[in-house]
Amino acid sequence: MSKRRTHSPEFKARVAMEAISGRKTLQEIAADHAVHPIQVSQWKKQLLEGASDLFTRGKKTQVKDESQAKEAELFQQYCFAEA
Image (cartoon, rainbow, N blue to C red; front, side, top):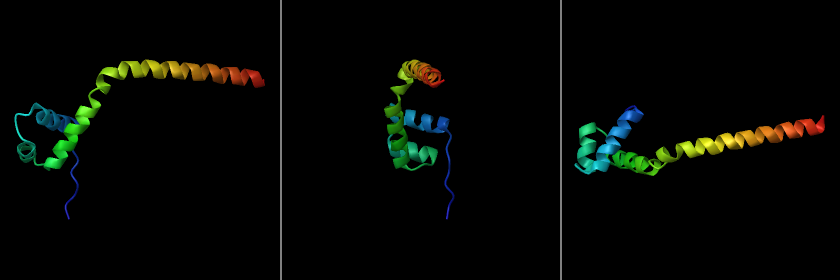
């Protein structure tokens, strides 16, 4: 029985970008990198689905910071109300 191989995020991204480019078929890319073609298509799908997060990360951080600030304020109000 063979061991599972783990690939770095950089490797996965490189393979997925190659698949997105369309210069080679998924089978060719898989053969070049010694992975299964289904794995290449999964990495490609993950990259395409997660690409929009790269451009919205700043907004999420700001919303998260505002949410944490509001929670802290409510917590302080609750603590002082019981004291």
